[in-house]
Picture 1: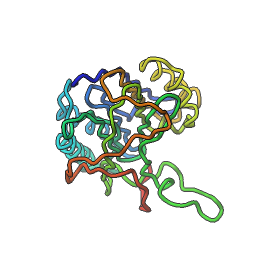
Picture 2: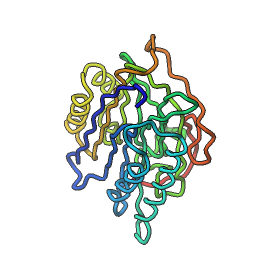
Picture 3: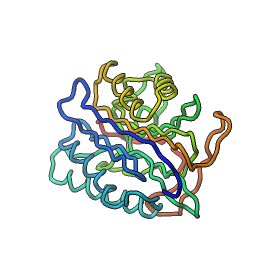
Length: 272
């Protein structure tokens, strides 16, 4: 991994109210990804498994990947989810979010990508920053004059839906930084402040992943919950002040994976 030392852990749980776990995850360097099957659709678990399998089959473990390789894997994930949805009356789909360690212009970086409302957070020191923007109707339209907002479960982009566009950008690899990659089963139950406190005080990656899943279940566990923790423990660039936000870098101009700052836009949605 070009001298970068990572400590990571993954934990997935069906929660307290669901009979089937529709989440799937890949935590094998250089790929750390979560896919959440779209609830209310047939075979959401198969859709999330297909998306994750596409990356597992195309991104070689044990070495940094490249932007074109990730682009090809994302295309393959789209095709695989479409195949699952084909012929099903209600369709099938999933979110996809995470980070892949890539080499770009001779340097290592995290290629962060997101389709849907699963999330990637960056934790440094005692600060927590949500890197991704939810592709949900709630986050993409203003509240009405009464202050009401749309339900959170209406998402505007997903694999298997009309819009599969991924936000993607490069993030510096920094020693001491921690990534949290999770399905919305975590963020529906826990506020960002509780996430921040747990990430700050929780210790090693495995212990933190277990603690976050435990807290989500104690808070209600209304959905499947999947958590990946990735710590860069050595070999990254140094950082000094927790208040310094990481820079956003350009990717390699690929037609599928492009460097886009997470953005909000008004759009129709599909209920999860």
